[in-house]
Length: 213
Image (cartoon, rainbow, N blue to C red; front, side, top):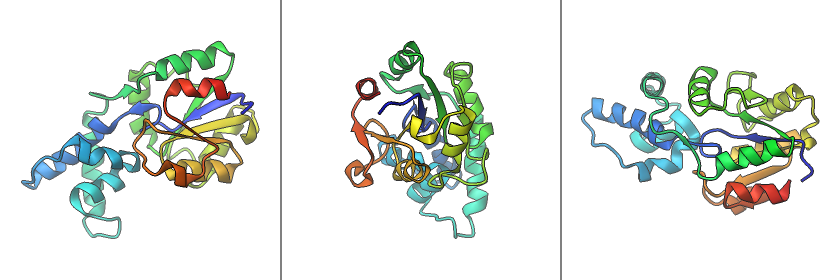
């Protein structure tokens, strides 16, 4: 991968946000007199955001009459405590340092809305380091549509083939493939059955990326 830039999914790839997302879901459960669910039960669904956590924790899908109000409640709870336990994954800080030391740029491409992305990015000290931050409302379409990845490449004045995208969900790989961008699936995230995604590579630790660039 002769990449000129590295793009990261945020939740489950760049940062471990599962605890804060799970707390928002458990506040909804508590309001209904339901027991709190352990982080281990909700963590695999964190990459899917409100939709995935409401399905896992409440058994409610987007076509359910209660989905929209519960989604709004979830997002409100999350915004109120958005970066309490959120941290960069172990080894990620060293990876970002190594990318920058090589003179490469890096950015973030997430389905998370701008208003929910800005605070954790700033709190993690990434605001002035990221060459681009493309959010779920930056373009009209969410991943797996390639629009956000194409927007990121364009903002960096690069061809998609000159970037590499790291993600922890099938839709990350699908979006990268549709954009014509090399993609790497990460084992440290929330995804499962990574072999089935047919990414260009699978890595176990952030540092494993350096040898592939």
